[in-house]
Image (tube, rainbow, N blue to C red; front, side, top):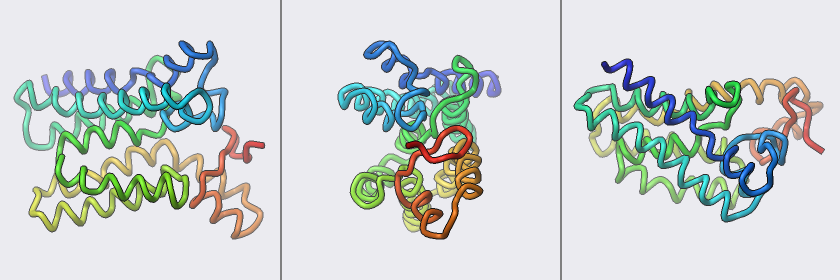
Amino acid sequence: MPILIVVVCYLIGSIPFAYLFTVLVTGQDIRKLGNRNAGAANVFRAVSKPAGAAVSVLDIGKGAVAVLLVQEVGLAGWWPLAGGLAAVLGHNFPLWLGFRGGRGLGASIGALLALMPLETAIVLPVLGVVFLVLTGSAIMGAIVSFLLLIGLGAWRGQTLRHILAPLMFLLAMGVRWIPQEIRALRQAEDMGELLRSHLLDQRYEEDGRPDE
């Protein structure tokens, strides 16, 4: 029963809202537009702001729904976290798109909001500042804000599974974007380019070459 619920959470996470909205609005594949990432930020930039906002809300929603579903069927302990992680992996590797999806930030935020709502709500403005104002990098925003969330959870006396949850979601997202960063590292010609590839929103092709 628990494993079946986790599989359902994966399928929920696999719903490719970025792809569906892009097809609906433009008739094109989001994985061929912008930075080729099947996520809300790319829809926002490459399709339209309303479509990007809708995808963002829905991606956050599917992470939260996965956690709430696990809790609703009476599974406790580490199972709600497992359901949230399954949803993020579903987003990153969706069954319906040949396992080529987004990076999982929205689904991770939704799952964390369901697991530890107050702490996550406190940290979200930090994510917004780092992502939208300082760097434009969703990766850097996630790293800074989720590490802060770990400290905040520990300070507020959360359980070990809640304290570790942001780290687990970073790892789940990393399964998708670390290979991209390794390809970027191999292509970097100097330290300045390397830093820009990590700290700024530099876009890369599937083979690791910068988008022109």
